[in-house]
Image (tube, rainbow, N blue to C red; front, side, top):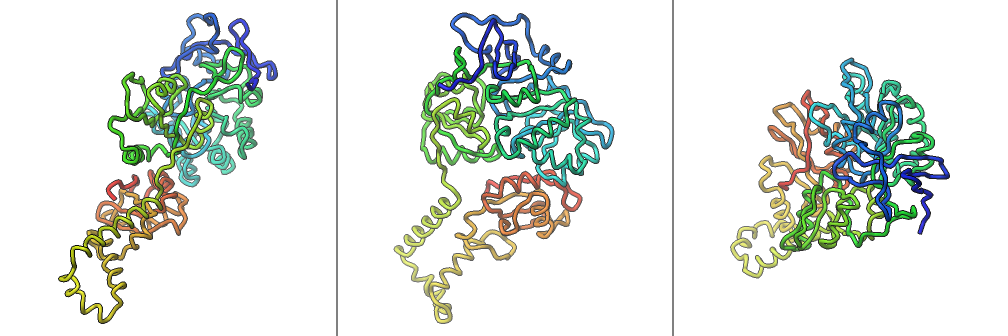
Length: 470
């Protein structure tokens, strides 16, 4: 087994290479229970250690490391530790900065923030720079490269940040943004440091540079000899963005054809047996052990969470039908329906179309009817893309329409400037009275939703989502 270098001596966790020493404490947050390092005999821990002690350590300038799964939804109690200060003065920077792996992770933080706390996720540089220059949010969450760009633009002032959260830097320290991360943390040296980590043993050098002698809180994923714990069993996984998981659950249930599934969204794991176990939330090691006992779980994750899940179990990917697969299925179904109609006879219809056969090839007439079928129900007479060409696109609902004086040109401009969607990924735009529908390439749909939500078009703040009625 791999030697991580961590040792437990007299109730203290030590890494001899980096000379980091941590007191063994109880994790004060629900959902990630336990003590550091299970031993053959009960571990001696500090008496009366609570969440207040971790908060006190932060207030006194001592870094804190929380050992937890890499998922913002698991960190709803983190705000009590950070105590963000409302930014009431225009131009004042955010009091809390959360450094994430990417903009998808940044967007998740705003979803788990308590009511009344203004959290802004950096998903577009221009929009975020304008927001910071107006009334700054209490908390700013963003990817390393985006935060570094805002600092370069002088839109983000790091000297005004009082607390900095490094959200699971395991995904950052060996990547292309490692140098930018070091620079960012170095410039915010006065800010209190809270490091979220699923395996602090991987962060020895990082902690030595940016969070020396931290208070480590949580259960380390190592045995009493310091070696990684064995896999819990076989787990299937699927990389799905959080916004699409409810829809993908339906696709999975249709493909598996199960009777009684368990859709686990966090919380206690039931003991009953189920035909399938689907996890839309990221489990801790203890929770995954309980889920594995029920069957072979399917876990929805983001790409950045894959190394964490791989450290817990033996993984097997689940391939979902893609847009091209669904397009082929729809085309095949259409051909079968046409074949059944031809078998039943179409004498009357042939008589109606006979004058067209004198002017056009019958195949062209059939193709024209197919195009009309695809346009049926739109109600505005605009041409639509053929069924096959449009199948690889998803439809995005945007809450702005003709009554707001919005046009297709406004929507295209917002998609390109604010969401970063390529022009060739934008399809048909249907501007209706109170809302609009935009066909976007499947690979750019999530980016379009994130980029459009919160932007202003014709003076109206926009809400965007995937249209499920298509």
